[in-house]
Image (cartoon, rainbow, N blue to C red; front, side, top):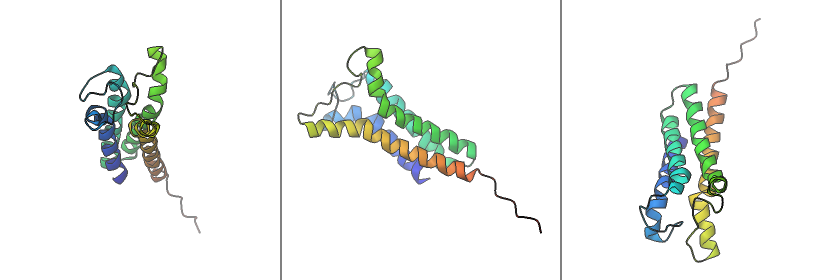
Length: 148
């Protein structure tokens, strides 16, 4: 339940930060709030939806199947947060579809990369993997008692 709730919060962060972050100087180009781009859709909104749905599924999971599917969904969303910006160069033919961090300092750009993509994805992937492990172990049959 705890990992599901954390995943929901992280998914909401990942989906909203590109739209509200510019109001606080925490943005990728375009650095205007509530500006819709295909890069934001594919690299932030879609994985955020996967993470939120996976987190909700984990929070409510009553069966092994629901837990495993939800854990995988959240994990794939986390992996896409990590790999999506790099892989987007394949369909743009140049720079990442994510845009560029707008901070004027190197440390600020690093913090934006961590908060928008790689760090967020690592935490989500970790929580999804922990949930997958928990459901995989819970699904193991109990060993039989030896007969006397």
